[in-house]
Length: 344
Image (tube, rainbow, N blue to C red):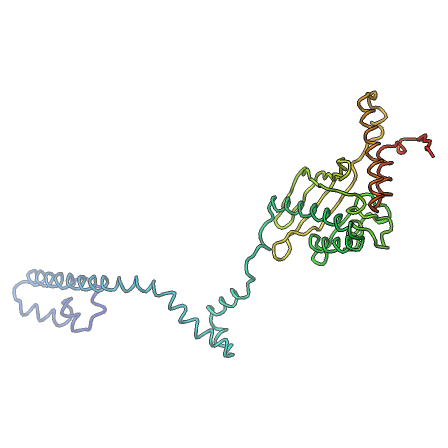
């Protein structure tokens, strides 16, 4: 029975294969040369095969081990090989050889990477601290408009225009604005509508006296009921308080602000809703008995308001609007007839 054919013999020439594996005429020669029985011949031939086979495996192991450092070095050289390959291809693109570049997946990948916009703050989600910083910027801006009004109405309007351009998103997104104390045009989408509410002076909005200039505020604070953030859009809702310079009294308004992140990372306003807190008249008529402390507090508020109106008139500010606010706050015209006897 013939000996199995070794896979190692396939790669050898015929003469070597006969020498290592004992096949062909060499097998006949060995049988004649060795003499004796078949069993003795096969045993000697197997011994020669096993010896040669072991030597062959040893040579393969030596070769593989000698290649191991070269293979590890190849991984270290791989980035250089990629760069060396990409440089001629990139040069081909620059020289106008589009056919070569079109056939190269590497150049196509480089082109896609170059076409991607750089990552910046414009793709970063909005954080709650940023919303609070935007609210502070709005409050500081309103106070600055009021300070400019001491110079002139024109200076205040110019400051208001710069304020709106800096904090609102007109020209980038639609801006929805609903100011408090506005009846003829309560819903506004234009830049001029916001400026008019803050500093007045626009013929399109005749009822606007200028929120930032009709009263002399010296402090604005917020009480956020909640801040909701969804990626690049944020909403804030709550109460804002405006403190009067002369009396120290605070005017309370309710607000909703919407912010989006503009190019460059700055937050811009795209929603601004402001309103006066609602008063339930039915509950007011069913209130408890009036106390003496409440009467004294109402008298003090009346006196402070008269002094405040006089100070506004002396400074040349919008004292008429302050007078209207005083009447709406102190007198009960919303509830029914009011009996009034003037001194003069």
